[in-house]
Amino acid sequence: MTQYKIRFGHFFLLIICLAFFTLSFRPAVSQSKQDIGNIQKVIRLQIEAMRKDDWEEAFKYASLDIRRSFGNAKTFQNMVLAKYRIVYQPRLISFKQVKLIKGTPVQEVYMIDSKGKSAMAMYFMRKDKNREWRINGVQLFLSKKLKV
Image (cartoon, rainbow, N blue to C red; front, side):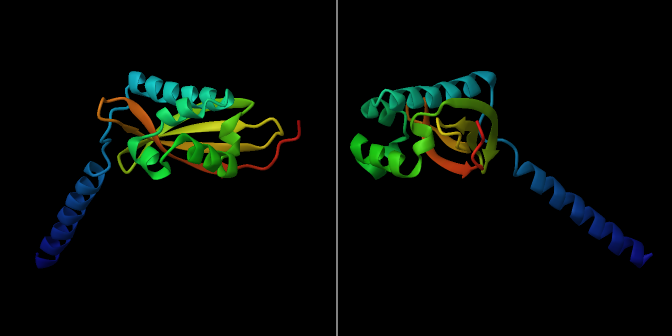
């Protein structure tokens, strides 16, 4: 009988742990169609501004933390051109899914540049004080060069 109580106790503890684990991964931010559309619009507008070399406009779509860390559009431009060239003037962009990573919406964007180089860009998003979506960082995962 004691053996059954111990097993039942372990089983009960396991259920509690699983319940806590699944509750902790519930989305903290809405992923409504409207939010996804607005996130994609902000990314598209920043890419279009960079395509036109309007770095002041492109800088506006960055979060306040990003703008503070770079200070001005020129420093932002230098960083993009040095480390994130593929987002500057991609030949093709394709929006994939929005994932939640630690409660932060992350938009996946597949990109190909004019030389056939491709990457998956992960755009980390954040709402500003006006509840507008802003880009809070980008992480690139480069692919092998495509033969065009």
